Length: 145
Image 1 (tube, rainbow, N blue to C red):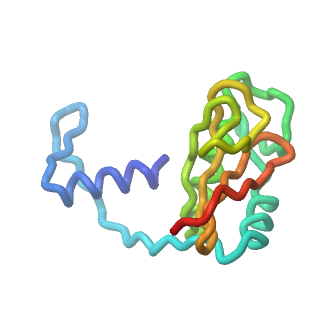
Image 2 (cartoon, rainbow, N blue to C red):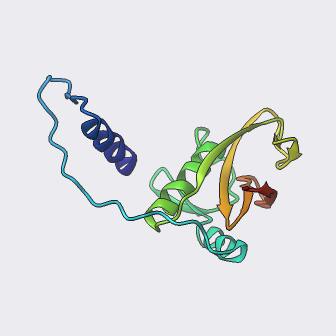
């Protein structure tokens, strides 16, 4: 959350907007260099990264996915956000993708019913959807160009 907040604050400052705290005092933002984010070099590299990041933190404890519902508030969007944050920390670009009824771009990408969050990413010229439900299916969606 701190990285996202920092990015938003930097964007606001660069766009000429003023940012104020609750006390209407100017907020001082230190500039930090944001390294260039890259895409995963291969499907295998992403899958290895994902498998290393199947640990989640819930209420201050770490659990390996899949987990029973240790917290009623911890679900697919929390997993997707956790993966996105870890990818950013590691210098990789992935995006949270919300789907409905298990479909994205007309393809069945998840066994979920209703709204569901996963990950969208590019690897080379290919686009993929990474499900946050076990068995963590990685679905090819199509070519970028």
